[in-house]
Image (cartoon, rainbow, N blue to C red; front, top):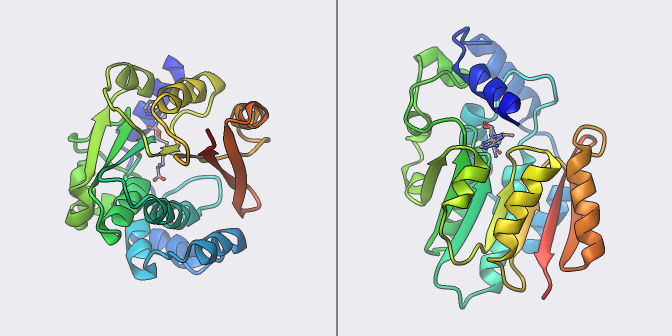
Length: 262
Ligand SMILES: C[S@@+](CC[C@H](N)C(=O)[O-])C[C@H]1O[C@@H](n2cnc3c(N)ncnc32)[C@H](O)[C@@H]1O
């Protein structure tokens, strides 16, 4: 695990940036910004909640459009927003919503979940963990690298209302969770390290703090690329403690929506 973390850190802290020209980042953005996902559309229709397209596109340009081998796709932001708004609507008695995310990266998914809180006029916090520090000026492999190194807060500073609900926690998820006190986790998004042990550890933290109807969304449920996540989800399904719903946003990217049923 240490090797993976070292690789992630050195990837982000290396200084051969910007990796692409401004035009190339914009071309990637324009290529995908109007792509549809039937399954995510269906969930949005079912819930009746849709994130504002201009808002998410603008956020994605700065936090999702990166140089990488796999195909870019930011439908998970729409999914998280819609599912979380529906959860809030279905649980009107809740005074405070605690959201836990593992894997902040540039903050895209945290911001979408925070917007769901704001648009629902609900008090809540998004606690998000990443090994990448929050206040260190670095290059992020995104169009903003043309302005020089930024902290994560600099990168997200335009979205002040959403930033207010977010608590950024720095460190390895396992270590952070060991020392983290939270009574309830209403909603969780797991998107950090994709091995069985890490997912199990994060799940165990969340499970103890969830009640009937609370949700966990797992990213990257893809048997070929991340077999250990799929193995974990299959085992969880057989335990019948969460209702499992797999949603695909494209041929190679699926999410698992797990709803606690007892
Ligand atoms: C796929 S990205 C997260 C993307 C983000 N959720 C989004 O949608 O914009 C995964 C992130 O997890 C972080 N990460 C991976 N393993 C980790 C670990 N064990 N502890 C903390 N952060 C980790 C990486 O640094 C990376 O920023």
